[in-house]
Image 1 (tube, rainbow, N blue to C red):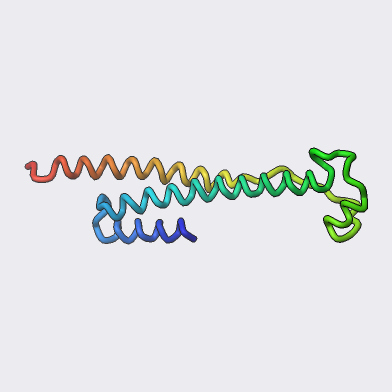
Image 2: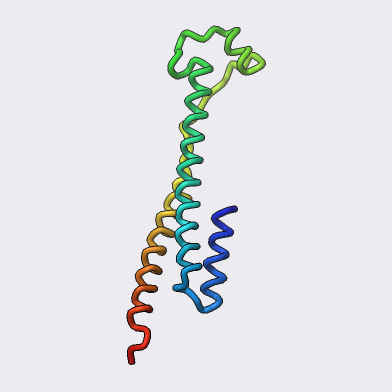
Length: 121
């Protein structure tokens, strides 16, 4: 939701014919950071949760050391067919953040070019 808010701020600046203003440039930077940090945080949270669950079930670090009573107390019941999957990293969001970062650099260079040619005939 935060990335959408930053994207709307950028689009409003572009629609107002101010694509190289400070507000738009800051919006691009904030959008890139929101996407990159949000995607990395989501991937890390999924990885940590998977490691925690797998270790508490005896599937990872404590293989053979977790009794069925311990697993029952952790899960609240007897679950015979439990499987886990690998962490799901939001690659699309992270790539979108990298694209936004590239667009940030392009808009910043264009803003410098606009300042340099201002007043030239």
